[in-house]
Length: 415
Image (cartoon, rainbow, N blue to C red; front, side, top):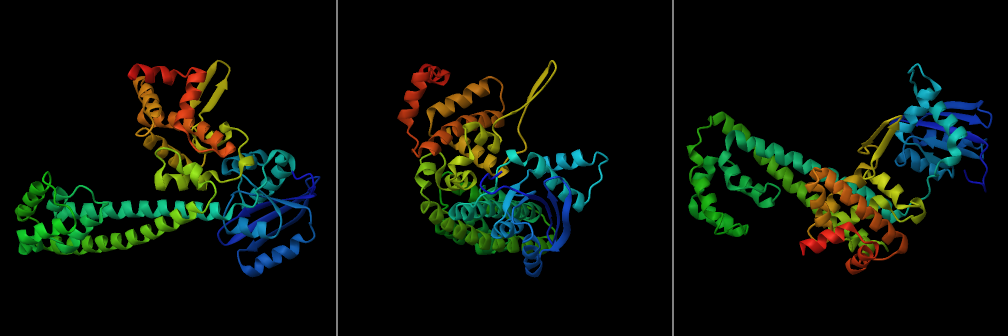
């Protein structure tokens, strides 16, 4: 708790989309106030009026971002985010019968803050660039997932009425594949166009390759050999055309997102640090920065960052039983970014590839090996982050030599 501003009352804030339940306790655990507010401007104004009677109020809430959190911070309150799993355990501690209501959840959060809050980390004002970058990167990933869904739907439609298109093109993330569906929505339109237009299409979209052009022309010529019912072709070609056009619009939006993310990333002081990571590139470097942030005091040691990213395992020990599990309760967005970055780094870092192969030789799966590599990278990244230094491959090699790294011995044998 903030020693400069001692807390006299503790609020549990159970938030929802359209309303929020609040329970306020005093230092003894007695309920000083309980009420429900709607998620409207008028209700938030009423919230400010109610909380004026509690000038030294701290609030526990089961999230660290969102409209409710922003409103609480705007009121100048001390806000303490609670992990959903921890919130569930606090609720079970207060009510072992399993009873659950919004009021009970708010009361459990308030009492947990009163009793255990001295060890909690207060939610502080975030770097505006990092916050915007985080939202943009997460939304970009959501749009990419949406694009993947549209591509799957398009491919399924083509499989049902136009298999030759799937034979001719492998990369359906490429706009040229969608352009083909727009230009030749079915086998009949493809045959009517003729070979000269096929070749013109391939040349226009820079797809004319000696190793693939014969395969594609052959697939175009044999398109009419598939005997598909006319009603199916008419309906599904209409559907496929709609999906291709949706993909084109979505791709335009993704390009806008990418431009905004790159511009915002370049404006941050830590862009060079994250950009120096081998394999991070223009996409993963902003994601890593946005999820880790710029507050150096947030992670006192590398292990805390590794736990947040989910690379540090969970240890379970009782009596003679000792097991190790994969950490699942973590920042999923950071874990995905670290996993992709660690995998990409293998192509640019010899030690990363050697370490990965050594783990694979020991029987680890691809995911396990990449996760372990990500654990090592986060240790390096944390040190870079704390010291504001760029990644230096030569410096890392000297450290490996100084500490007698077993990876270095494998690297020497490989060379």
